[in-house]
Length: 435
Ligand code: BES
Ligand code: ZN
Image (cartoon, rainbow, N blue to C red; front, side, top):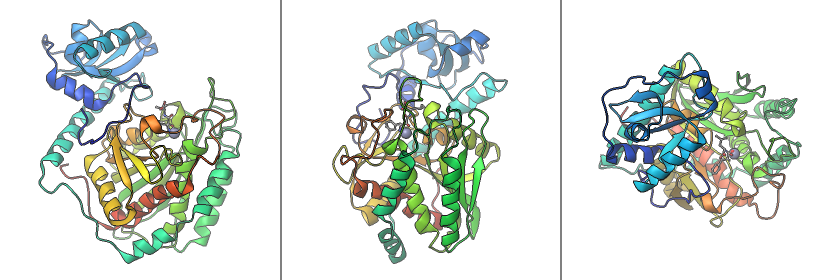
């Protein structure tokens, strides 16, 4: 069901399926199409109170689900569904031996004048991704190889566990970093101060920007390290800085693992990057706003990047890195909403530098900010603390705090991944094959 996965995560706690299962469904569905429908059902106001989904066109038609956007060439459609329809679709998909049978587009597709063009590009991206991955899978030389470089070895040895610990402690000491608090930016200003101190202590120039959003009052933070010879090519290294807990989201939300951990990995990687020579490609570090409320910050950032035709060559997402559910130094690598060549690049960096164990598996839905970039056509990779069924179960509660079950040696691997992308990928000319 997934493209290159060797092991699948247990997605039983998730109700929704993923893009790859939809694509499979599209290929194998036995439903018969009844003619072309470019836009069979114009969405009305009421529709938008329902859940937007992407699913197999033939299946939706057979189930009489009103279709808001249809692409008959690819047998895919977008519909706004009620819980009852959701039930019907899940049952039909199960009869076909598929998972949920659809992907939720909640938080992705909003009621707007650009509904039709947004729908078209969501489907186009999926189809393009499938084509690129298939072409990639057919190439003979599938594994990338990374030459070991002493400068990178030395930089990796400079990453410090104590710094990670200090960052996670500091971030998780805010009562909450939830994006819908009365003041959702309490932690942002002091973080910017600390970033500026870090930059002042470094050897190369970098700048900090605060990014305002339309869909949340919370701001995202970006640090840019301008590249030398190929500055227009950008490597993005990111994770979400916000946290959530409780039904209303506003309980005490320390978010130590989710996601002070990934945020800290990026901060410590940045410190070391700032003591290295400038890379050829530009680096953009992001600490995204409002991920827990539906990938809000990254959705706007990735959409703007696409509109500006920004040449983002790779996106790393770090979200939850502290809980070694599969054992120390056994990490996950998500195969959905990520790119096969970047997952191979992760394997190659493991062979050369990390020497740990990587277990491939699925999140099952657009579970973090990499999905925002992926939906806008950019290549992504998402290494993860464990597998889905062995991950930290305290997330989204007030118990997501530092404890002896969290492992900073394990987490340091993820700073290494960010640093290798900053020093190797950002100094290479490797890109997504098959544009
Ligand atoms: N860190 C979690 C997502 C996660 C869960 C990643 C399991 C990998 C494995 C993230 O912050 C989160 O909670 N995401 C939301 C989805 C989002 C669209 C609101 C979720 O999983 O419910
Ligand atoms: Zn998270």
